[in-house]
Image (spheres, rainbow, N blue to C red):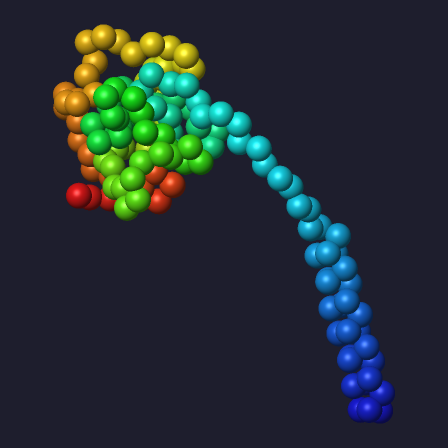
Length: 135
C-alpha cells in the first residue's frame, strides 16, 4: 500500500511540475521596445517612465551644460561615474503636485541653470535610474 501511495504521489508531483513548466513557457513573451527620441522639455524630464517634463528646480546645476540638459534614463549623455543632485520637493513620487512644463515649452529667461535659487539637492541620481539620499 505504501508503495502504491508513493507511486501515486510521485506521479502527481511530476504532473504538477510539468504543468507549471508548460504554463510558464506559455507566458513568456519577448518584446522589443523602441524608446524613440528623448522628451523635449525646458528643464529636463524625470528619469522614470513615462518621462514627464520636470519643473524648474528639480535638477541641480550639474545636470546642465551651457543651459542644455544632459539627459536622464535611456537618453542619459553625462560622463561615466556621474552623480547629480535633485530636489525631491519637486518629484511627483514624493507628492509634488505643482505645475509641470509641457513638452516643447521654452525656459523662462530669468531662470538660470548655473545657480538655482533655493535648490535643496537632498537626493542624488546617476542618470540611469540609480540614486540615493544625502550628499
